[in-house]
Amino acid sequence: MSILKVARIAHPVLRAPAQPVAKSAFKDPLFQKLIDDMRETMYEYEGVGLAAPQVHEGLQLAVIEVGGDDERSVAEVPFMVLVNPVVTPIGDETLRSYEGCLSIPDLRGVVPRFKKLKLEAKDRHGKAYSLEAEDFFARVIQHECDHLAGRVYLDRMESMRTLTFIKEFEDHVHKHEQ
Ligand SMILES: [Zn+2]
Image 1 (cartoon, protein in one colour):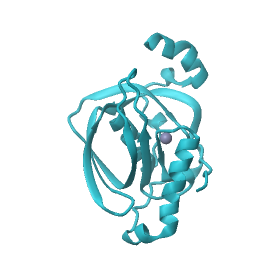
Image 2 (tube, helix red, strand yellow):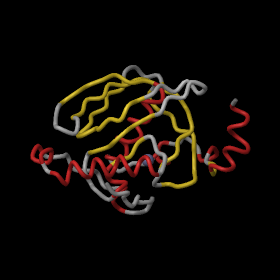
Image 3 (spheres, helix red, strand yellow):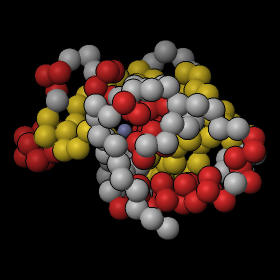
Image 4 (cartoon, protein in one colour):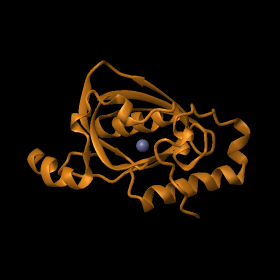
């Protein structure tokens, strides 16, 4: 497995809509290796998700894994693969919370996201699945699926006034949230 180079904002691959994954790809060892490499890359940079355009592949593919955190009421999400995902919001309730992105290093900002959604996608073997997600899990899905449409979280921020460096976030923001 290899750790892949992560594209940073202003690289055109992050702004181009990703192409659907073709049926034939699932049997391609290179496609399976890409998924394994994306997993490794996500771990290396301590992300909770990674979309293929972030590693210079314009495909509708993302990986997610969330370690649970009881203190922050974040539910654990085991490693999962999203191929050709479709997101449908459930209800119109939104939540505001800080997000970061491996393609926009060192920064965080407050982004509104739908609280609850339905995800329909294929797994790494091409098997279709669907699930309902809410709260942080739903936020990660929305963040990764945005990447597949050429969007980043900055586009979703209602105001740039919450934009913060991670160090200053820990020093000045996080402290007051607890
Ligand atoms: Zn991101």
